[in-house]
Image 1 (tube, rainbow, N blue to C red):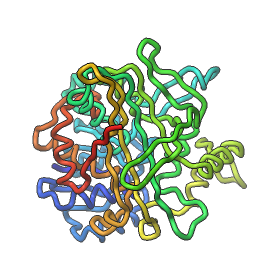
Image 2: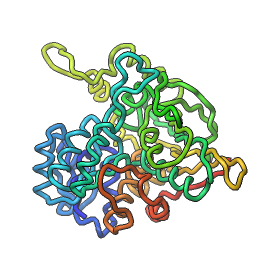
Image 3: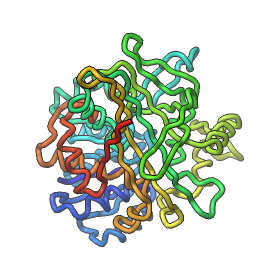
Length: 401
């Protein structure tokens, strides 16, 4: 398999590191706007022929197409901030190769009732073109990171193996990660974090469909496994709520994230000051997006691994019935930062996201997953994916609630 990896930040580096030991991965092109960053990752991998480094501007579709043609790739892997999803997605279609991302095309809040009704939903741009992809025999596999991705696979597995009837599927994410030396240092892309945390969260209910609520709504205490403990989680906009109802029979789908009071307070302040704005403004004759300035002022999550400690947990809580009796389970994966740094040289949050994409490559390369059109992880058999998780060093757990 030949892959054009667009974006070599923390997750992109982890994808390349996890793919490196796999002999069926013939070549991964490390393409990034910051060529020095791509070369930094290339140097770590110690195989420049197999991992060539290239400059690319992901906002320019024609440049992505040119790079895909140059290397005759089988798959374009989008590891950029979702701002660039549309040109990368369109480039794959035009070139005629498969496409995969870990976050779908962006949403736009409802212009009049943003905390009640959906406007443009996550992934709408991609799903609107599903028939074109299917007709062309190409696969666009959306949302195959950890959340979305692994969490969606868990939801399908629960439907197939653990429940006769599902009342609710709720993605629950929490961690006890600490970062030394910084008062505030997000362990994931702050650009993406601002987008998903300050947009109106989406909920899906049978008979009602998709609707929205105010950010950080419906707080609840959730007990996370393996020593992480009880954490307050709140509603956040996320792809699983847009994906799971398409392929899993349930009455309700939610996504809740353990952000913490400090993080929520900072996000609210950024919003109040207009620093979450992704549109450019003029500052002393220079066009700049406030959100890009915020991202530039904070440490790069890709270089925080040696300052981080603790564990991060991603998983899917499912409530329903089995054999006529009520049942609740939590299917999860816990990544320990120390173990991830030792094995992959990457911090836990990005490694936990990245391994799912590489498993997806594996399943496509070897024919365990097949399809055409725009599909989420739930559209495929969950067992082949879950069977490979331990092999890749990220075993899953199942906890009866």
